[in-house]
Length: 114
Image 1: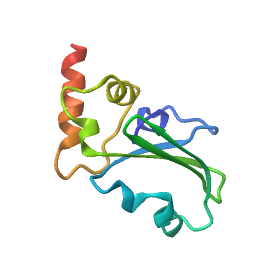
Image 2: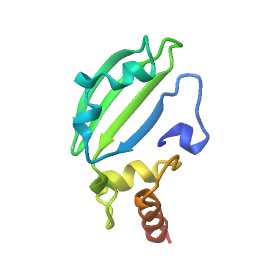
Image 3: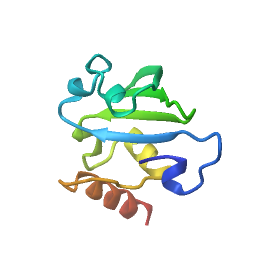
């Protein structure tokens, strides 16, 4: 999770920002319908590409906006590129990291801040 929710500074108008690292981005594509199965009734608001990240922004039935960034695991490779450094540096919380890819990225970010 990245952004305001990860920092603990969310407001009523905040969206939930999640980055999913996967080597099979196509299985999470819009055409696969994975988010509809996860959150039935949600509506796609925007799809965009930012470098290696494919963004999918949804409005849930509750009105909450969820921005899902799909990226290859190389997005978190050390040394971090400027985009990854900016996203993680703006606030992040690791929710699931079985291969410690994000933990290594977070450690590199912290070390560079010293």
